[in-house]
Image (cartoon, rainbow, N blue to C red; front, top):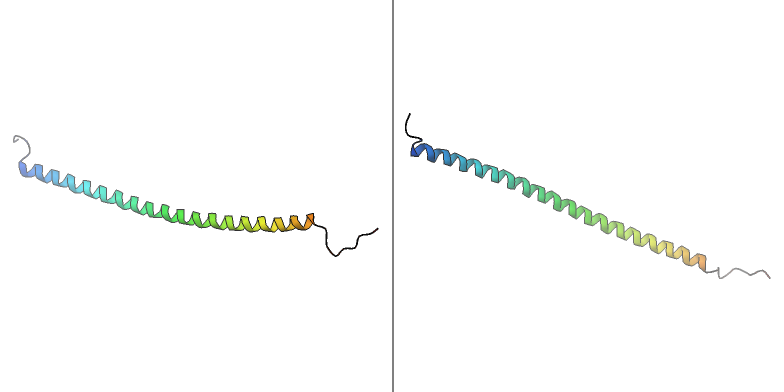
Length: 82
């Protein structure tokens, strides 16, 4: 056997390691960017749902206030029995 790996063999080995490292980094970043996009989309959907809920809750509150107001005030055209 020789005295270790030849310079060309070491360069080839290191080059292969760098290629694999770059591929792993690229794949990881692609996944993270895609995941980030999905999170943003879900966040946008959540914002729309919150706004819709708040609008409906406010409308319901207004309707309940109207009903309460009608219950608290006697009818104006009703004749009182004496």
